[in-house]
Length: 338
Image (cartoon, rainbow, N blue to C red; front, side, top):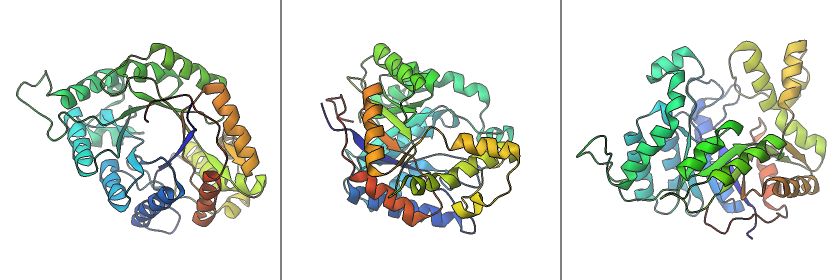
């Protein structure tokens, strides 16, 4: 039994009145802080044409993060494989692994752009998600020695390298990670029934592969820690409002201060989405969070928790991560490297 690992996913969230470049530079600084605090890995994400997110080129940003740090694992959560050719993805991660050997994670998802316009600009469509298994298989070929579908073509410098593969999946997609022999990243930090069931299906169906010999489970979600439960909850307010706004106005906006949001005269529909967005997270004092993570491990036997929390107040957010780093952790179950 090993101790539960804690890691970070930062989406380079923009804040109202500030340039996107500031968010990207803040991500790099945050990675240094996360490394100093002892977090296991630091991931960045891929979002296109989203005003509230500056992270649109994850492998580029991952290179900047890896160059600015020295020990923490660095990766993506994730590169959306249907938006790219597997050959190019293999080449990009081959470059990263060659530059920063032994520190790179390849986290992949199957989402495509949120709107028809974004999907057209990316040269993909909704149906592309249905070919995720085949894309993963082709990616494995490029790392293994060249794509059989393209004789004579090689993905240098990826060929022969072994970059750990993580598949981002919802409850229904856990079997995809199992078939690929990849680590599973699944949302549900409160360890609900759907999350636990998905993890069970993943472990039962897992097939060893060149990527991994045994199952490995990462549960992702928001965790906020403060000196009071109310202060911790307020950290979640800016992101909850951004999600509610996106569902009622069609645009995911930059973050706003919690006090402004709490003073808003919301419509009934906005209030419903806002309150829904505040549910399903872990927040509270160190003692509250320790109890919640212990319950999560008890229900799911998770090996790792990937913290995805964003907030407008960067000082309070960093304090939350500092507090979380000091929380006594329950044991995970995996004896394999993550």
